[in-house]
Image (cartoon, rainbow, N blue to C red; front, side, top):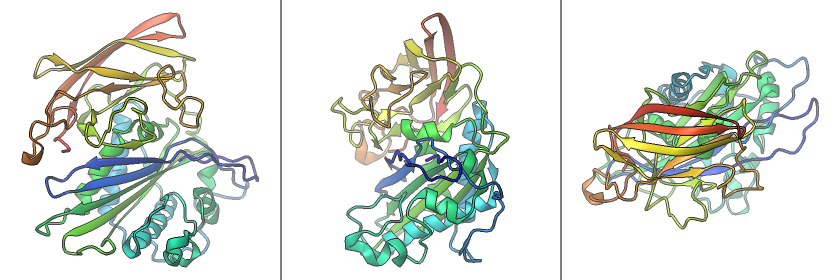
Amino acid sequence: MTLKLPEKNLAAIILLTAFLTACGGGEDSDNSANDVTPKPTALAASSDDTSTDKPDDQTDNVASDNEAQAALIASNTFSLARTSCGLGGLSADTALDNIAIQHAKYIKHVFANSTPTTFSPHYENKIADIANVTGDNNPFFRGVSFTDRLLKAKYGNARYGVTENIAQSVYYSSVGNIIGSDIVAGSMAKSLLAAPYHLRSLMLPGSSLTGTGMVTYKTFGKDTANNQGYVLVNHASATQATEDNTVAGIFTYPCQGVSGTVTALYNETPSPVKGTGRDLQTDPIGQPIYVSMPSAQTIDISNVKFHDIQRNMDVPIELLDYRQDPHKNTIYELPANEAFILPITDNLKSCTSTSKKDENCGLHGNSDYRVSFDILVDSKAIERESFTFKTGAVNN
């Protein structure tokens, strides 16, 4: 979520809340649920605010319980993804760290002490059936909305735009081999980079600062030896110097030379395949390709080839753009100068685990894919784009 509001005025905030689910961690792992809000907005701060203002009511030990190394891995994953494709990297911001950690601990408290039936991780509102662990009854409460929390923290750079990405995962092991938070953080970060509506917010050109919180918890009502929960909260902010950063020409992610992407997208809300009848949890798609051209009014993509180099075969694709947009006339609507290429992997039989033999797990693991396509820019000039990227291990 990126927040911007008029100077000294709290205008309505439009939230794009998306849930991403990915299976990972081998045969003993369950689904991992991630939630982010990538819709750009902005928050104005009074002229005497700065990004180094000390947050009100923040405890001195805000970083306690934070898995600092895991949080750093996630931040670095996002930063590397950006710099690999020509955007500016993300520098650590302690103020953003504190805001992210505090909110991660709020979410942790909810899931460690209840089983919510309705809960949006972006909000700290009181929920009737779990009122004892939500709202101001939660010891880590700092404000109902992201805007409230930024204002409470007096985060000056919020006037230039701030994003909030939240991921939550629950891991199960029948033999008690709980996966480390470092591995989970990297996996969740790469899964967010494979979900179209999440990916867009992570690739905003103006973002330059970041802060991440990562906490673990024992899931409420479950065997503590076999179950572990994880919460990742990432914030990124623009600054006065980077607010107007843009991209010259065509931007894609992945791009030439990117490696280690996940192989499959198992769920996202809003769904990039809405209206097709596809259930991503049982029939995922492969790592999407994000295409953006900020200098253009419209782009039209054609002649797409998504080629598996090792197996010398083309992967079928579907195009998601302003013409095929299943969320037209909603807050999720894609602009006419952005698009996604979605690899349709039904017939690849790419799973590697014994329990999923001959099933669809997206693209093949540790494999090179060459993507090429034509772009008609503003109905005038056609440009040709081509690059190769490599997947990581199969996320079964």
